[in-house]
Length: 106
Image 1 (tube, helix red, strand yellow):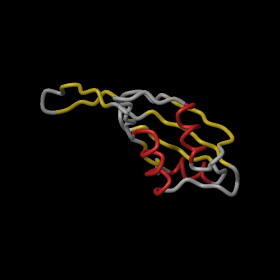
Image 2 (cartoon, helix red, strand yellow; image 1 turned 120 degrees about the vertical axis):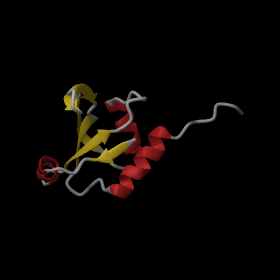
Image 3 (tube, rainbow, N blue to C red; image 1 turned 180 degrees about the horizontal axis):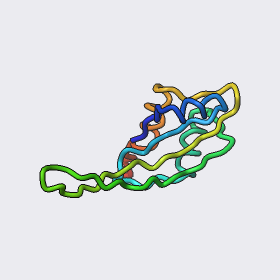
C-alpha cells in the first residue's frame, strides 16, 4: 500500500511538482515500471520517477535496552507536469490499480 508522505521536505518538493510516495507494505516488491503503468492508467504522465531505499533504525527499548530493528518505507519521488497533482483520492486509485488481485481463472 502507498501513502503520500507528508513532511516538511515533501511539502517543499511539492512546490516543484515532485510528490513523495511511501511504500508501507514490505510483502510486495514494487519498482518504477509498476508505478509508471498505474499513473498512466490514471492519465497522469510522470516526467521522472526516482526511488530511494531508506535504512532501518535500531531502537533501544525497555529496562534492559533490548535493540529492536525499526523498518522504514521505500520512497518514490514522482515528478509530474505543472498542471497535474497527486492527492489522497489519487493514492486510493493507485493502490486499487496496483494491489487488486487479478483473477486468471476464466
